[in-house]
Image (tube, rainbow over all chains, first blue to last red):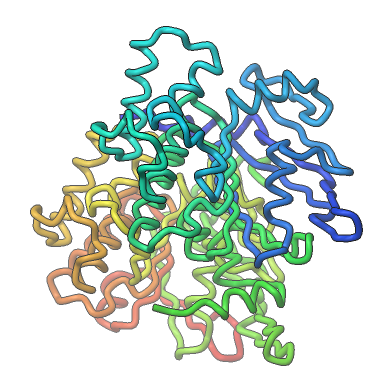
Length: 267
Length: 242
């Protein structure tokens, strides 16, 4: 069993602070003037329809893009606040490899399809300096077990796996190096409902047990309700509403959020 | 505002509502504004169970959801004692409310939002795990509570998604009562329960009151209300709390 996060960790302030993030593609607005705090152990859901700017925002928050305007501050393990956009390229890459993870909607974007599942997970450990083969293999096996992979298939290529299995390998690859913050772009998109449920349980368990902070982009309000503590609703590049997940979904204030919530089919 | 003022005095209310109003604006239905209530003042002290009473549509459930922070307060203050201070739920940031719910305030409704594959025992143990109770102790206490609500042990390792409606409701009640919260909100906890389980709920509420919790509840069943509540507050359609 993993240990629970210290509930007092929050007293130290936000883990990630974004201020006035704006990014556009020519005339087309990606996201405009987004400001947010993400606290340790907090899972933030970002919802909105296609083209609302959620993925652009995720790319800016995870420093995959440097936006045209805005600042991003991340509290390092040392407690020091780092200005992510002002860091050198090497330092930023190191941060992204060690402290952060990024789970893509399409596992092909987050995995190397030409090497085995085990190598995909082990590679990330080697990138942060692990060299001992036995130790790497042991951690890889542990993580593939945690994401409920059949360990007999550790040496198979991801191309031989189903979409749901590929997604679980991608998650193991991202979590094996012990990140504190994980970004996820529609992590359950494109999967069958039964596979999706299994993955949601897995993600929920991992964020709870590891005390991970996460930003999860999804267009599925049920996924957001299950995984996120806090919700941000985007439309046309702007945040129209944010608050506790239950509050935003049960007492939506903005016309657009009311429309989104009332458009969900009841089962 | 959070936690600046130290409050140790038992004469101080645990929950204080000041001029609380709630209205809903339905933007996609012509912007119609529905006033649920306004000007609600209410103090709830340690060791009491306040039953909200009134005809349907007077906003009893809305009031409970406002206190829990699940609905946004239109005007007024909702002060709850937490961590040696007082938090205004109407103004608190989301992470402050999450923290307050984890340690101080529980909410029991009749509906379980089922998490697909999590076993009943873990569903019930989760609130304890979230405040750092070790898995062994959390599971032992969860099992005790499930047994109290007459959930047979052979079901504990199964996910409640496959349970009957009544069993799901009892798992939810076990989850709601497993932590000794200083503030407990209960919305129709006994609806559609059989007599034996209804009595378990009443016992749990009385035990909470005895250990000094402040309880606010809605009890449709008059007999349950008379037995569980120490005070009854009338909500009227006009909106003033008696």
